Length: 69
Image 1 (cartoon, helix red, strand yellow):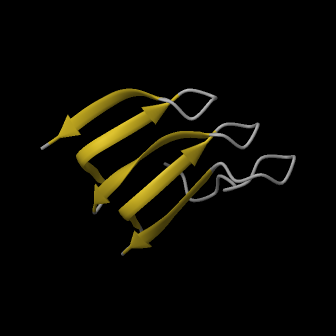
Image 2 (cartoon, rainbow, N blue to C red; image 1 turned 45 degrees about the vertical axis):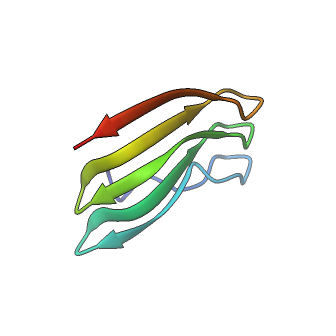
């Protein structure tokens, strides 16, 4: 992901929230839709997806779990 990209939509709601370590996504991250609903959440280890990532529908219901090694 490009650091130049804003972490907010034009409407002021967040696109994503998370921490960086040495310029790479690291730790727990959340990604949101333009309407503010949570779309996906999971963890990174220095830029690599790890563990269980969860995908949610607009009502907040879990629709998919993906396990990254």
